[in-house]
Length: 305
Image (cartoon, rainbow, N blue to C red; front, side, top):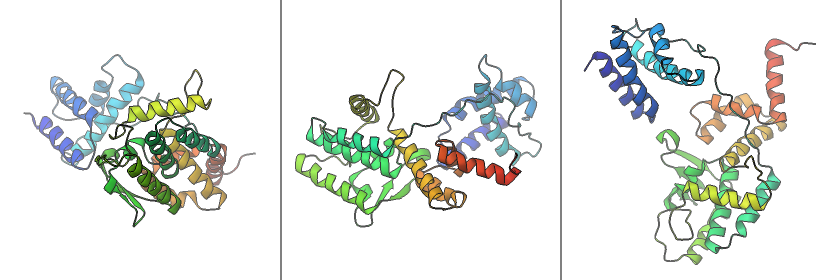
């Protein structure tokens, strides 16, 4: 094994111990090492990294993704060998534009919960009304909610523990009293309708098993189709309930005169984002929040008339 290959293994082991899966890096970095060795170089340079990134006949977006993998490894390698060059960013500028999320209105969320309440199976109706309601008021990811066990919801403290969230992290989600009451009512109804079920899952299907994401998505499509919220191009998703929660929170802060900049880290932590920059993206999601962005630019660069 070459020293570069050993460094790749050490880098992946370190990052994965911090909760990062690095599936793409695990595939691409050995290829990068092979390229460097075939080029007769034992050192990672910017020119070699850029040349390797653009080997496949692909879009600049994919080249940029490959170079991002190389850049992360280069930062680690530079701590071992200061002569290592870190490839610059912006070499391949044509990055994919992140679309503005669909925003659920409070009215449509109410209609969604009414639609869930009317599902034919009583336990299915109770489960999906509670699940969609929790997603709408907590900003949880659907996989986090379906992955909850009964012991993860602590009604005494009013806190949900999300285990192995994105990046294998654990976080706590405090509940409003009304949300805790609604979940408590679901637990009572679940016990009445399915007394013999022994599943550890908090949210259960009509067969008493844990919900899965495909089943949740199918149920949402069924309800939103009946409500006329879908068309030939598609319709709202469960993940957009999370987007809508974040945007409503930011709008409430803005309208209440609360500093968005001063509280964005709190919302970022609550949502389970790694960095506040992921949360700032929601500023582009509504006209009210675009005003915040405009004011920020005016403050920084001066209003132009």
